[in-house]
Image (cartoon, rainbow, N blue to C red; front, side, top):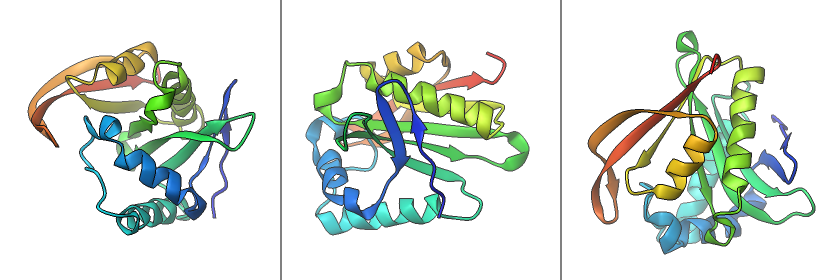
Length: 179
């Protein structure tokens, strides 16, 4: 089992566990967090549990390539969101990041703070060269987070994302270790 805790000024990023099921199911079931997400709202907690078990399995591989963290306040055990980094092919030294926060914690800098730590982890501990992210063109909140962390918009891909509202264009962002 890989026990990896990352810390920021206000937050702890820790590996998810089965004990997080109720929170993750609630997070994935919110209409607001689903608006720009391709997962869709789960039909029941069993569907969420299958996803959670997959993430835990990936976190616990000897050579982890998909890290999924619960984000919680450093002052207590209250989870406020999820964040992950998925490694690409070893030769390319790249990865993709993603995040999802409960609507009660939007616009407070938590996603930006968490993403900055994930980028630091990716470059300094995983020795990555490039980290990417994508988001729907209408997802203004995520666009601000990506840009505040120093990521550069590099692409505009037409109708890539199958959202509940229909097909959405996607912005591609990236940051290099040398940026």
